[in-house]
Structure formats: structure tokens, C-alpha cells
Length: 112
Image (cartoon, rainbow, N blue to C red; front, side, top):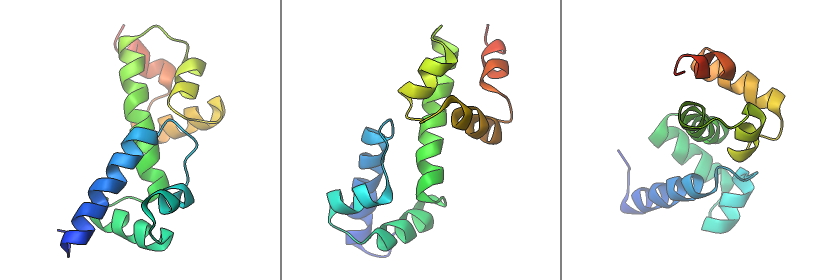
């Protein structure tokens, strides 16, 4: 649980910022500037409250959205990769496979 009321407000703002911007190429420095907080403080807070590093949390948001799009649309995998914020299809495939345990193609086939 958050140690202070400030931590609670900060984590809510942090999570909202991540949810609103995960499709962009955001970095810890971007959130630090936006929230006017030290990036190391933000990193520790996120790790303590969510149990994930900043990059793992952003990737989880991206992969969750990709799963929705793979199930609900006929968009090309390369389009989905770009739409959810991955810089390359290779990075998307590697991250998707490590998080979900299947390639995006195999994941989509489960729902068709």
C-alpha cells in the first residue's frame, strides 16, 4: 500500500499518464518532466506499487492492447505493432512471444 497520500496521488497520475501515452515512444524522462518528479523516485514507486519496471509496465499495456486488436480486428500484425507503440515488428514479435507465450500469428489463430 502507498506509504503516503502523496505517493497514492503520484501513482494514480503516473498510471494515468502511462495509459494515455503508451502508444507513443515514452521514456521515464518524459514522465519525470511531465509530473515534475525525479525519474528514480518514479521508477521505485512504480516497482513498489505495480511490481514491474517502467519498461515492463509500458510493454504490458502495449501487449494487452495488441491482444485486443488481434482478437477483434483483421488489421495486419505490422499495423498493430505500430499502433500499440512498438518501434519495429521484430521487437513486437519478441516481446509478444515472451509475455504471451505465443507469436502474434498463433495467438490470432486461436480466435479465428
